[in-house]
Image (cartoon, rainbow, N blue to C red):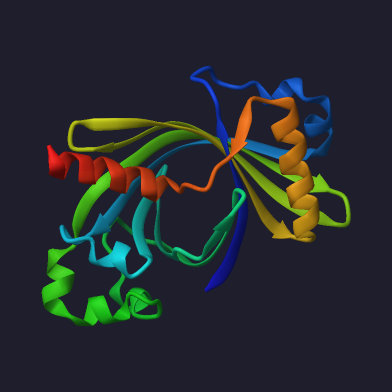
Amino acid sequence: MSLEQEMKLAVNGDSKLNLADLDWLQAMTHEQKQLQLRTEYFDTPQLKLKQQGIALRMRQIDDQWLQTVKTSGKVKDGLHQREEWEHPIMNGEFDLPLLRQTPLAPIVDDSGSWKQLQRLFFTEFERDIRMLEASQETLIELAYDFGEAGSGDRRAMIHEIELELRHGSLEVLQQVAERLKTELNLAYNNRSKAEIGYQLYQQNQAS
């Protein structure tokens, strides 16, 4: 288990940003890569996991699969702090022994509840990653995501920047987020991708 600490910034507008235009950001970047990500989120039709503040997802990155459990944690002014259990696995099938090491254990051990789990929504987006070496020996992973979330025939845009603290100062992380916010058309974002997906799912159920 790890404590995830990240700032989320929503991009206002549909046009893709060119972060290379920011000279100060370029100067901080020591590694850069681009990924295509597809993530499927699972819950019961009655949203039992959501009610317990748990998210379960399966993410594919090229040929690699990641199984992730997250708690809802705390969110304030774009800063998300939550517990996370993430493991690489061999294929797209859940590893139940690993899930039993998370808050999901009671669901896994209840065969009736586990059998009710199904994919409710997905996200699919292009992610541009920059590793930023900031002041005070602070390492930040910047992820710029551009794509969509979907459930049934409903879709919603995903257009955001996440700044995850790998190590170092949380204050420095917030300073980087504030500078991005002042120079680009961004706003602090308290909504996770899972919340967007759940909203789409519930809209489908209501229609």
